[in-house]
Picture 1 (cartoon, helix red, strand yellow):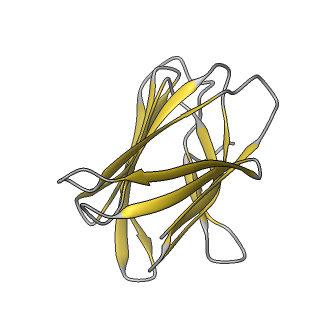
Picture 2 (cartoon, one colour; picture 1 turned 45 degrees about the horizontal axis):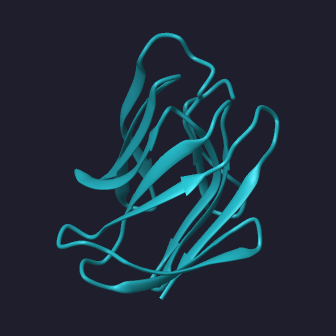
Picture 3 (cartoon, helix red, strand yellow; picture 1 turned 180 degrees about the vertical axis):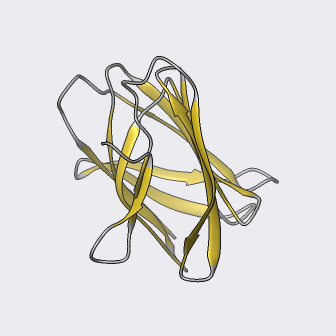
Length: 133
């Protein structure tokens, strides 16, 4: 991905680049009245929306077609190795989580609204993540 954040034709956003060796960031990227900030490289990818936590992965990932709704979030994720994803959602809420069509089960967000999901990634393989109430 040449840009570290972009808007897709369907209105979703794609961001991050796990292949970068140096930290790269883009601030104040406008999408439908919201401002996004992304930091990314091989060790970490982080997204903020209007200054609030949105997404973080360790190690870094590339995220495609990231869509938020009132019920949750969905996106495709790529990376070189297994990653721990932290997603910002509504606090103290139960969500149903599935990765590549496999239901992982129901998970609760913490007081800060963060949900942690581990995904088994390998180079060149995209995983679909769906998180919904």
